[in-house]
Length: 236
Image (tube, helix red, strand yellow):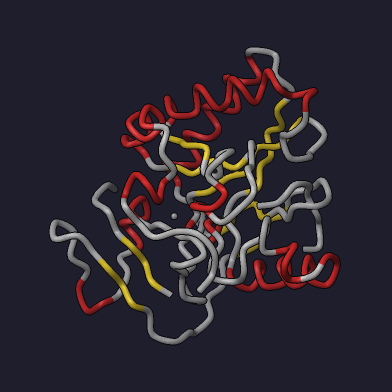
């Protein structure tokens, strides 16, 4: 999450019906490289979990096999020890999408920014706060535990130079991505005009894998919060 890439670097889960790799690429958002790290875990406090009637979760703990059902935003966080790694189905579909864009001549990198651990997000967020202050950082970078990247279902698309896909020079590529990502099971998570709901500035490059629901969500024009009726907006 954020506008560029940097190399140094919800507490509830909401589950909504639909359907992990122990190492994965992790990139920050202000330089131009992706890094890889082994998934680690960290103990945390208890987590409130809400589920649908059709998808009960035993013992109040999240079932990581139900990754597609997790909604993470500024009001719903993940525990520090939630570390599923990248969802393998999502990664396979992402690679298909990237390959297709490359076939069409768009300058898209094979690398991407995918899974980020709680620990990694802590370093990333703190670095942004140190650089620009908490208020500014909160508009584009998630606090530890509140990053969708920790689910293993969120991915940032990079240009051929390893930077986030943004800017007028990539408007054709971005248009294709936004109108075809749903065919691969993805939605554009942070849309323009939805800032008050998603809690973040628009990110043309940030995709969220939702599987078979992608086309329906895309056609609805709704954010993930609106589609599922999940509270969004800023931190409490």
